Image (cartoon, rainbow, N blue to C red):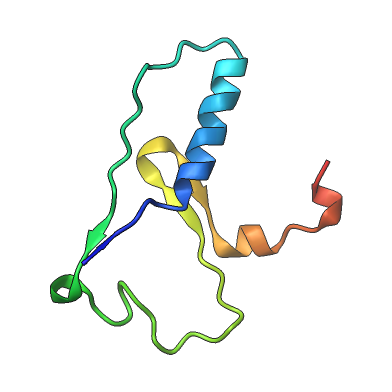
Length: 83
């Protein structure tokens, strides 16, 4: 069985921090579901991808919070995009 926090937590945290800095009232508790998986509900090509090459980069998405960075968007960034 695997319990793991989503990589999208970083993006959600940054989005919340920016909202707080802009003066928005923030809740005292933000609950993000922890993904749970075990061998009985994993499917090749859906939950794991045995044939990916070393160039694969996973996107970060958490739809309920409006956070969705696709792999092409992330990989298209370059040093000029960083200010």
